[in-house]
Image (cartoon, rainbow, N blue to C red):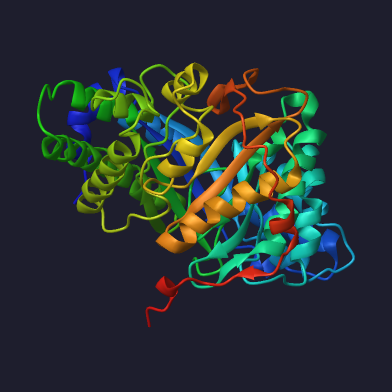
Length: 452
């Protein structure tokens, strides 16, 4: 049984090594809010979110004070809104986005995810409308996050959706160019998207989830780096053991918070996502963990192998600590959100092609990467397709969150501030994939899908 004793040894981690619970995310099903009248549906959505999540922020703050554990964010994820948009054809899904935004403001959360569509095998009645509305929705709301799942290992990759998303990513960036293209930072394109991810911007409440659930995302890159710094010259098996033991402690703390939040909010506990999620703060970097293993800089040859070791050890330590590990659970490599990644990109040690190789062995994918503002839509689509192919073939979640930096070229800087950070605009391969993307259709599911 978990109690406060389980986290006593983490006090130093909290005080000195940036250990925190990154997010308590409440997942809420909106399926019972569907209505042919869009305004009636929006009112139901607002009312249900406020009813369930009205005490979410206060509960998180109370737990944080009582246990001395920093809980950085309180968030909400909801049913993919395309499912509700299908019930009111002819009405703009942007109405739903604005209802979500109002609910986020009323409950005090920092993000609400689920302005989403699941189109990995084709388009349903609400999908086209929702996808087309994403640029308007993200430019006219403050707290809403959006995601689109365009592929799975079982279904293959919907290349028609991939082609659309390239243009949508560009459009979102252009509409928010006066705010450093912030809209694109709230849009994720997935392959094999999980239904219980607590992290933004890709969180949504999957149709297989309960009516309401509490999921927690923990984080601790600084803790892992500090543990490795004390390891001196042990071999890589020793490094893996240190990471596993550290991940165990981090996850136990996360489960304690999740179960306490569940009890106080009278909502079932779902999962702990034990991802190492970095921040721009010094000492809170996944890249610095890799450098602590012996790399001169993240991006050097050997980076992919070091990241594979780290990601595997994090998972092994986490699953020993909790029977309910889920979400993404591994090591994130968002460039603008990681101080070490930012430095590696600035000095030229880290390229987009190296990042793509790294995504084959870590959580998620090409995340928070600024690219030149004149990058063509078909190039963005092709980057999405490449990343989806890695996820599809390897039966893992991959994603793309690119920010076309409108008006900027490679080497210039884009800065969001706060958790989203900032960093250099990275060069992309300029050879055209246009004809390939324009073919459309589906990339068939791989042999790995035939597991029955």
